[in-house]
Amino acid sequence: MKTGFVLNDNHTRHTLSGHPENARRLESIREALEQRGLMEHILRVPDRPAERRELERVHTPAYIDHVYAMSFEEGYLDPDTYVRDGTWEAALHAAGGLIDLVRTVVEGTLDNGFALVRPPGHHAEADHGMGFCIFNNVAVAARAAQEDMGIGRVLIVDWDVHHGNGTQHTFEADPTVMYFSVHQYPYYPGTGAAEERGIGPGEGTIVNVPLPGGVGDDGYEYAFRRILVPLARAFKPDLILVSAGYDPHWRDPLAAMELTLEGFRRLTRILMDLAEELAHGRLVFTLEGGYALDALAYGVTNTLWQLAGHPERVEDPLGHGPMATRDVRDRIDAIARLWNL
Image (tube, rainbow, N blue to C red):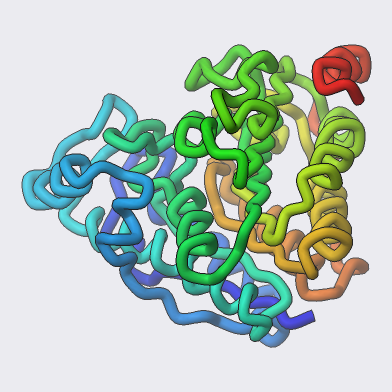
């Protein structure tokens, strides 16, 4: 497999000591790529800043101007989301790098890829940032794929522990984009109930699987196979994008979903098989959350080994967490019945 990655070097200028979303997240991934020899198996795609016209497909001009102005002043977009003098450049390169990685996959230069970028994006709304997110990278890339690359239908899969409210709101009235999210609920940001299924012409393209804490690998895999796979087959996407947060891992300090690194490998394989079956293999991941640095680094490298065609390369030195996982098949079956599955 020809697997590409984007890594925006200027992300280090957007950081804040003591904040969970800081530069060490991406630097720990960079170190893991080098230590595990992954650089020899994947190709780096240059990142570039997103253009204003690309951002304005998702965000309001007033909000874009606000982020630019705040980058000179420094402050907060909300109590969780800081802005520093390098935030503007880092956020532009996060969105632009993902767009160009998607382009290389759509054009067939690469089979798949992973955008190792920050700040993350799936909480960012049209007119405000929140939840550590500045611009909604995956939404901006999906629109670019449709308007600039000839892609018709896009499936966005979000396995971050938090619901991607910004992504849902961007596409909830759009029948050409399906958004599937499995997330801890009730939890930040409070959106993502199973009954939220889209509005107007987009009814039936927002798919939420809200679950309690402690689900573990089997629960996530069951949600993917029971709900995502049949709905994706009915939707028939031309491209699959993944908002990959590694905060469902049991070591993450901000969540309680009890996944292991093996669990993320299983989810990756399901998505690879879906992309091969439905979307000519077009599959691109982008980094969202994940705040336990060891789990984050191993999670990303394991995902990249799968994407690059080395399924035997799985490292899980962290093993299973100390808490027992719960059986949520009945709850997932109830959500499946909402979709007549």
